[in-house]
Image 1 (cartoon, rainbow, N blue to C red):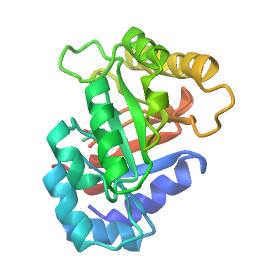
Image 2 (image 1 turned 90 degrees about the horizontal axis):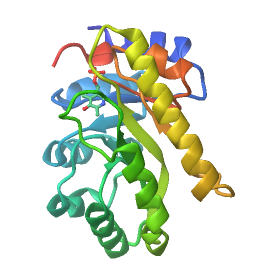
Image 3 (image 1 turned 90 degrees about the vertical axis):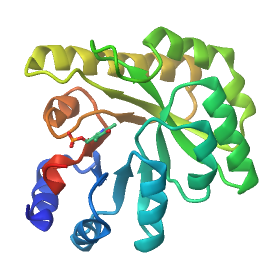
Length: 220
Ligand SMILES: *Cc1c(COP(=O)(O)O)cnc(C)c1O
């Protein structure tokens, strides 16, 4: 894998306003440093322990995103530095993020993870639950947490029409949330969708942030 070349090729082919999250989970810090030296600054990790250890070893201007299932008892470890949590999917998790954000005097940016795939196993709110969560309004009482948009994963399949349909669903849910709950709030602006196997479709359907792992770092 030529990490530098992959980063440059992707940066040239992906529209400038779409952010690239380099998903570095299970890869060593040395490979992250290679991507960093090629100009990459946003990295995504899915395990708390691994994220904390890499954050300590690597340059301070990296934006670390958390993209995996997040246990409440581990929020405390990433709260001081995490740039974006992609996996907010319950009120209890929100309350813990609020608490830990307050403890380190930060506002922690988060995305609402929404289940859009056919597969049963993926985490996240259903689209209806997502709207109900926003409707409840409890997030408005959490000044140390900022909801910046939505995140979703499409079904792992070769059927590109299926994948497209799911990304469209996430985009239309984003639009509905924006209109109903964030009409005057420009910071509700992110749609995190698209991985190595489906990111071109995600971008066509309105992604603002793609999460690319194997394409950049090779197989895990
Ligand atoms: C691992 C992972 C990715 C990256 O997957 P690739 O197929 O390697 O690009 C993206 N998003 C999430 C949530 C992941 O867990």
